[in-house]
Image 1 (spheres, rainbow, N blue to C red):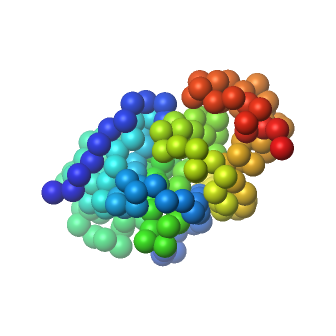
Image 2: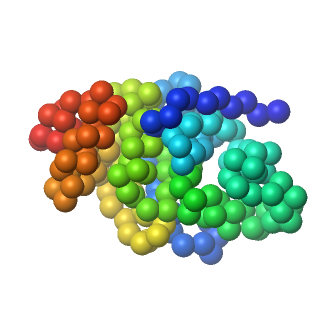
Length: 177
């Protein structure tokens, strides 16, 4: 039985590219896990295997546990993409110390979920070099979470300011070089 926990809200194959964040850090608790699912409401579930947890909790994703795709591992990407389109965020940790954060589209709401988790994980995560790939557009971008916030604040400064305030973060720590 795999372990999972819930934190409060606020936080290969032939499939199209998925948003990926590669972060290098040393948080012991994060290293022991495969990753997280973050629900559309911002609930964070720590998981040891994304696909198995999704199958065991199909109703949370609006899916039927008897869906035949759960019996066919080759349909894994299809089911994960379905979850992402419905507003879920998938965060996977690899043994190499890299994260993958998969989202359908990098919107303020999606960023809010990521900020919630990263705020809980701590300050060592904000400056990690990161590669972002967004599934809906297939675009890629490399930088840190801080540089992502700065870039997003250029087109939508008020929204980014409000998100930072919501998570108890000081804008000058994230938006000023």
